[in-house]
Length: 185
Image (cartoon, rainbow, N blue to C red; front, side, top):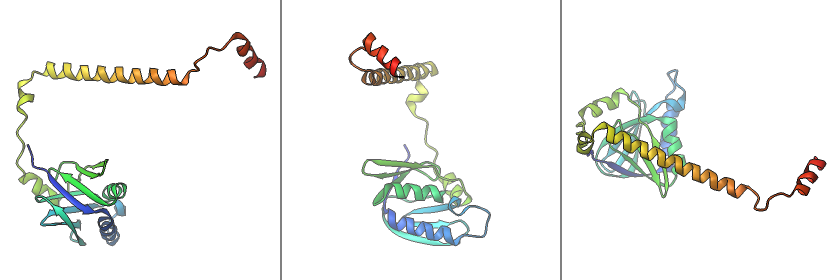
């Protein structure tokens, strides 16, 4: 199993730093918020950088381990704005999704594959395939997936039936009431 790198940081500080870095970068055809932000996590801080050493900002944070991950600037800002406060940020590697968590709110952002993070991703050890997946024949996994899909379909059908039962009137309409409704219309 791959190690996880949890990090806690202040969303307000990260938003300000990200917006400043993205505003400085103006010499290419990319939209300002679509530019990648590179996060270097480690040593009690998160370092935000823009591609090509155009700027750098450091934010104090509680970190565990070291990892470097890049993500689209606007996606990073959206996640921080949605979470606000002290955000728990967690990733496994430079190529795995980043999970942002605050209380019960969760947001996942996919990383970008850029030159600055490729070297780190290649240096990471590849995880071994799960032993239980190797031991199971494909038909058993397929049958399990089919049972799960069937259970989900039954749950949806039951929820729709309950919703329809709630929406329907409890007393049947008499013929007289039906004639009144037709006559009025």
